[in-house]
Image (cartoon, rainbow, N blue to C red; front, side, top):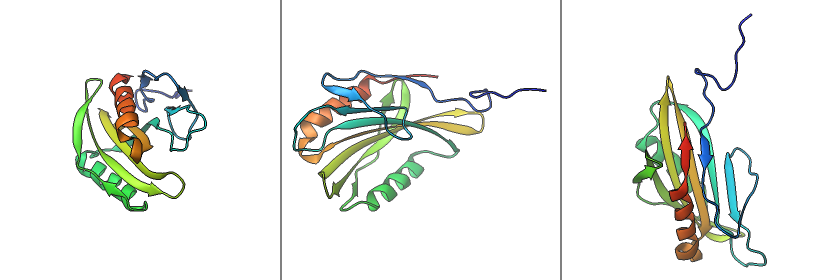
Length: 158
């Protein structure tokens, strides 16, 4: 009897991910993520910056229009949620599109997020890698720069 394995050529698994974690940050577990990191500052009175990497698969098409719609819905479900303009960049040599979202959290105050999506077609499905960095809106310069450096360090193996 033939056997089926996962991952396989028909249903490939998520890519291997390598990134640089800044000093003072720790890796944590978060549901439905491949990687989750957060600032390990103790005794602070602000929302702690964090970054998560997710992987999922979608049927094509899944591009700029679908990403804008999903992020718009996400922002619309939050208190005073706003969606910034769609942007593009490279994520380890792969095209990525994303946008900034901000909203007010009852406990954390204003939260800013940067979302990046990179896709790769495999047969009939698209592998989607989504990177989301979150930080206190009042700490955009300091924490936003750290999140950007982490995103710049990401390496994806097929």
